[in-house]
Length: 248
Image (cartoon, rainbow, N blue to C red; front, side, top):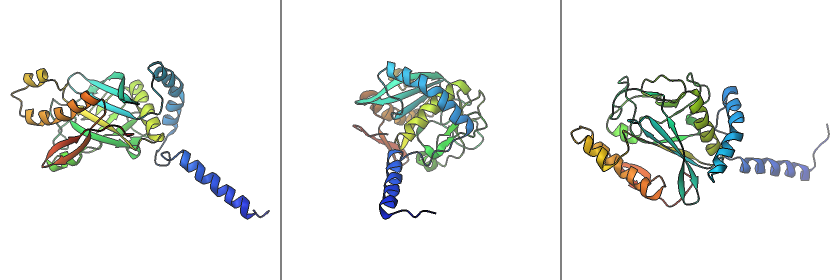
């Protein structure tokens, strides 16, 4: 067996380090034969569709969900903020308006969530999915319980957001591409309805009105800047900080 010279060893090490610097976000992303096939098939058409709207495949994404109208919005980052790419109809969601409170209540959550690469599930029983990260810090501060709250394929829900297989394939492909391209996590903001003054007035007698007014603060910041605000929890309430850029 031929021995490598010191120069050759250094060259190999340099090549390996270069490879990992080019693909920093790939290591933690699990795949399956299904996810690889779906992403491979949909990438060319999604690239064209994004380009027609002056967007780039692999750019950071942001998702908003509105329960009352059964809508999932997918936004893509451009230079000065996020631009709406597409609105997907939610095939099925369970429960009523209002947050999820406990395991088994069949409610879908409301609030501000984050999805990183480890939350993608290419082996889902419901085609493809990603975990929303419920309960988050806010939910836990209110003693809310539950697990495995997903955006997934199929058209059945027990607290999740079921999109149908075809719709979740596009969403999953865009999410995986953004995470592979360096987005550390993408935000998912879930609202009962579009947080307008008129809609809040319709539900002025709801016990959830104070909670929804808190959600509206984050909603309004995005509406003004088109950049999702930083979200923290203090004294059992969401607090927000406007952002000027970044990749999340």
